[in-house]
View 1 (cartoon, rainbow, N blue to C red):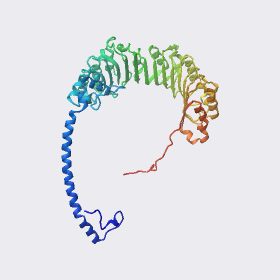
View 2 (cartoon, rainbow, N blue to C red):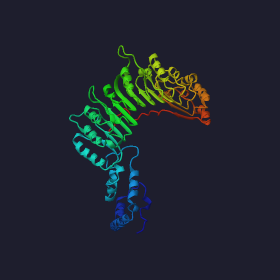
View 3 (cartoon, rainbow, N blue to C red):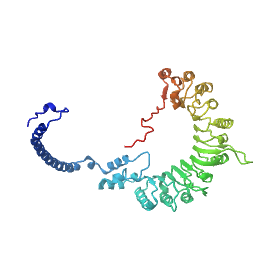
View 4 (tube, helix red, strand yellow):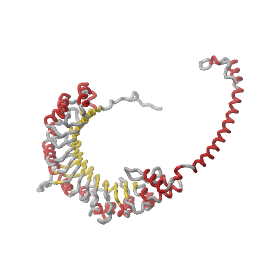
Length: 489
């Protein structure tokens, strides 16, 4: 059959054939269509034969698979390398070890016989009707761990439910393995029954425990707890996060090394009394608002803590009564909106007790000069974040007046217009020690004109001299052309 046609000249055009030409075209297509049908049938037959051959070959090639020749101990090592390194293992059939145990009978036997694969576990409290089934699955899982140390995490419900025994059931089950606890992370609503499970555990029942984190939320008004949890006292890292648990609950964590408080209703006196009862505390994060003042006739006693890191998102009056001679990292966010005498006095008193402070991160809603005047000479890293257009306008002038001679990193974030000449003068003076400068402009700079931004040309000589200079701008906000329309598709 020839590829040429009477209608070659009309292909790939808009030509519309006349009636007699349409009849000619239909007659020309009879033979090609019959030929095409014959070819399709032949191809279908060949495809069926090909499928049979592929299956035959695949079955035999499977027998030659290299992984079938791997010895038992090598497969164990491969399975171990499949496990997540940075977290516990979820009870999910889509990740190891469960997915390994469901591949074939040989892999299943190897997986079930390798205790290390099951020694990490993350448990999520299920719906109320499936608690018994989930606890049984957890029991089977942990039964495969042999005598290995355990890394466990539990995420209980954060909602109050009537007749809910899920958290208590899981904590009770996990407590039966406490002699092998090595790392434990517990998140649950701190009701009296759940706490009592932990409080009833004896002091020396967790000899392997190195790290424990308790993250609890109170769903009950004015919770009252008795006793403590003595089994955790010797842990090298003992962390507690609370959300609305009240001062009564806070007084049970005497051996904690890390504490994170959220939404606690504390007075200045409560805060200091709580901290005084935490002699091992190394890291403290506060997201609370603390009421000023003390009860009549009670004078505040200074509290000394071995803190290495302190982060505050709230107010800071209690700092003037706190001493942290080992503090190296301090973050204060959103607290200095009112840089009045009380705030400045509290901050100055606290900084004077922290001679080892090397990293300071401050939010500056207003003029930076009063705060910069308090900066300790020991700083190596300083981050200043502005939340108003003019907050950091004269920051480099103020740093020139009250400089920190050992500063190696300076981060200026959310800044608007900056005095460029003062910045260049400061950088020239600090070139011997300063290694990194990071500027992140706020959205205000986009409407402040080109002269509000320090040019790349002005910064290039400092880059050439070895200073790591990073400048970031906010993304320009775009408005959709469909904004304001109700579009239906």
